[in-house]
Image (cartoon, rainbow, N blue to C red; front, side, top):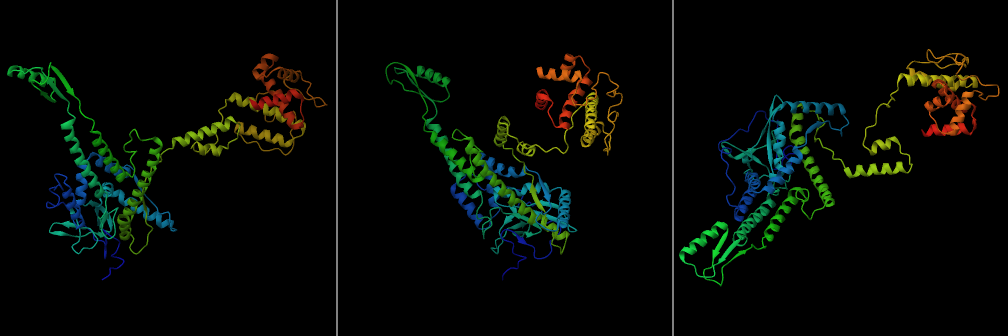
Length: 565
């Protein structure tokens, strides 16, 4: 009779036919958990064959036990297995709302519920780590304990409990006291993970199967290597006494040879003329065994990590080839992350939502590992070199491109220049002189623009003017600054022809014409106050802007120098 869709979910795990039962079913058993039975004492090929056949016949507990024994006996398998699992366990995890649903409110609600519920389950983190054993041993399971439709505990199922149903169905049962045939592990009550399941046999193919053959080959290769070393690679010392030794002399020679070394030694009594001592060096045929052991380790690396160089880089390796292999391993990690997420979402999170929201099709939250982004140092160095080359060749680069290339966050506010009160006062004074010049020229727009700049510096609002102010007003000038007509040394009004007859102006232009000089140099050269020098220089620039004409070649050179400064 065909099963309903509610009963068929694939292989290795059954879906509950009714409601998810509450309470706990998995407890410690003296029959199954008290004593560990090793799968083998000596790794004979026939023994491995019988273990694999027993797994195919339904003894599913033998497979994880065999994986444990391989890790105990071979350091390479232990390292690779732990590396594969640690690639996931080293990453923290989080629960995220389902971003593929249109009902964002329901997605946020279900994610919040699952996140808060799992935070209260103290055993869940250990369960997540326990389930990773399925990657290297083939299968792992945990029991979900519900009370009042809430997940309160997770109980990791010992691998010694796994067995096949007597009916031959492609599921994995759990053995309990009084029921050696086992009982089903239904969906919702148990989370069973079989990462490499093959239809229709749950444990027909795992990493343990090919690892057994490599383990056996490497094991007997080591034995042969040790035997060869015992026979051929031990240093030997042979004494040729040159004459036949008496018993007393032979005893003394034997003692001397033993004191020289505890390795192999011998005395050829009466062989040859003249006493001599020869040392026989070991042979070099052991390289065959070393290469064989390396081949086994490389094959195991390809099996567990799909590459070799990131686990064992020797003289034949290269950095570029290692980067290629690393990308292959990244694909393997992505595959493990996807399989783990699917398992936890479908077999742990979904039952929680079924009980919490009966009759509602709530969006399934996502279980995600927090990936740590690795910086590409070579790419960053190349980007910096490109920027430097562009700057050296005078190419303009937008700020957005620079922030993106250098991977620097874009600032939310513009940096303000640190200016002293004295600098602000001098700047305001220059802008005030510019307002006076703009007033004489009748440029109201420029007057308001300069007033706006003064307001920014002082931090006080200055409303725009609707008409030009009086040229003799003190509007905008800092308090305590004298008006132009009050300062006999300050800049005076222009003549009717629009030129500046002031001796200060002529002196400034002459000084600039001779060589570039800053304000302090002009103060010393002309023996004038700084306010007068700054006022004349500012007036020259503003006069050029207002009247839109050049004031001689000296002013043009001055403007260029100011831009380049």
